[in-house]
Length: 298
Length: 255
Image 1 (cartoon, one colour):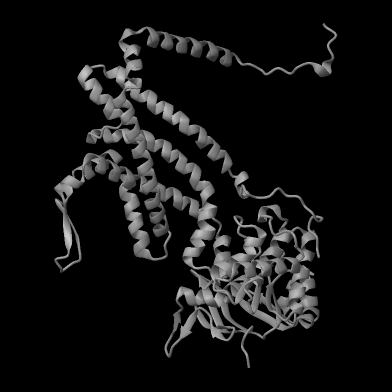
Image 2 (tube, rainbow over the protein chains, first blue to last red):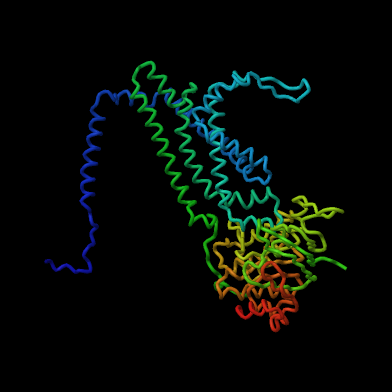
C-alpha cells in the first residue's frame, strides 16, 4: 500500500468484458477489411485517383449541386404554399393540398421522375391561352420535358410534398394562445402568418429542412435514369466505355460522402442553434442586465 | 347616449359538441363599469369573456359590444357572420389579457406593444414607439423595452401584455384570470396596474379568483355556475351577503 492521499485517488471507469471483446473483434474486422480493400487489385485505386478530379466527373458534380439547390429552393417555396393551404379553414383548399401531399408522398420518387419524363404521352401539347379565343400559344410537351426539365420538375414536386409536411408541423408547434393573441389584436390571417406563426415555426422547420437538403443531395442520383449527366450518370458514362465500373462508382460515392460530410457540419450547428432550450430566446436578444430590482412594482 | 364601452347580452347560448357551456346568459355592463366574474372552473366564465372578444362565437342570443352586434350583422331573419376585416375592426376595440400572457416570444416587449398599432392599424412607427414607451412606463416597466418575454418574470410579462392591449386604445378590457399563472408574490404588481386602469374609467370585465380585487375594485360581481349566471349585484354586497346557496357555498370555500 502506497501512502497516496485517498482523496486524490482517481476514480476509474468500469470496463466490462463485453467492451474489451468488442474492441478486439471490431479492430480486427476493421483492419481485415481495410487490408483487403487496399491490397485487392480489382479496386483499382489508381483509376479512382485518376478520375476523382476528371473534368466530366466535376461537371456532373456541379450539375448535382445545381439540381439539389434548385429543387430544394423551388420545393421549399411550393411546400410553404401547400402548408398554408393545408392549414386553411376553407375546405376545398385544404383538401387540394392534402390530396397533393398524399399522392406525392405515397408514390416512389423514381416512378415520379420517369412519369414526368414521359408525360408527353398523356398531354402531347400544352396550350396556354384565354379560353374561347385565339389568343395563346401551344407548346410541344415532348420538347419541353427534356431530361433536365423532367428531373427538376420531378424532384421539386416531390420535395414540395415533404417540405409541406415539415412546415405544417412547424406551424402546429406554435401555441394556440399565440394565435388567439394575434386574433384579439385584430390581425388579419396573412399578418398572423407572417409576423406570428412563421417566425415561431422557424426553429423547428430549419433543422428539418437541413436534413432534407442532405437527403436531396443523394436523391438526385435517381435522375441518372433519365440520362441527366449528373454525378452518378457521369461516372456511368465513363465506365460504360472503360468497363471500370467499381472504381468509378467509388469516385461518385466519395464525392457524395465528401459533400454530405461538408453539409453535416453546418447542419449540426443549425440543430444546436435551434434546439429547444436555446430557441426560446431570439439570438439578437440583449443579455439580461437587470437595471432595476427584479419585478419592480412602480 | 354613447354606447361605447358597453356590453349587452340577452339569452346567450353556446355548446361545444354535446356539452352546453353557456345556458341563457344575460349581461349588462355599463361604460366604465368594473365587473368581476367568479365561479368554479368549468362554470363557463372564461367562455363568456372569449365570446365578447370573438375568440368563440355564440350559438344564439343577442350580443352587443360597444353598441354593435358583435361578429355578425343583423337582418330581418338572421344574424350573418361579418367579413374577417369587419370582425377584426370590432376586436381592436376590445382588449384581451390572457392567463398565459401570450406575448409574442419573437418580439421584444417594445415590439409586442407596437405590434397592434403598427401592424393592424397602420400607425406611424415613431408615434407608436413613443406611445409604447409611455405605456411601458405606465405599467412600471420603463427601461424594459428591449427585453424579450423569456427574459421577463411572469408578472412583468403580464404587465407588458396589458400594455399591448392598451396600445390599441380599446373601450373595453377583458381579463381572463390574469393572475392565475403567476407566482404569489407577483400577483400584486399586476393587480395594481389593473386598479390604475379602473380609476381611469376603462370598462373592465375580469374573470378572477382574487376576491380581494373584486371587493376593492369591482363595481359589480357575477357568480356563475354550470353555464348560468347564479347571482349578480354590487360586488361588496354579494361578497358580504350572498343570497343564493350556491354562491354561499362557493364563497365559503374560496375565502
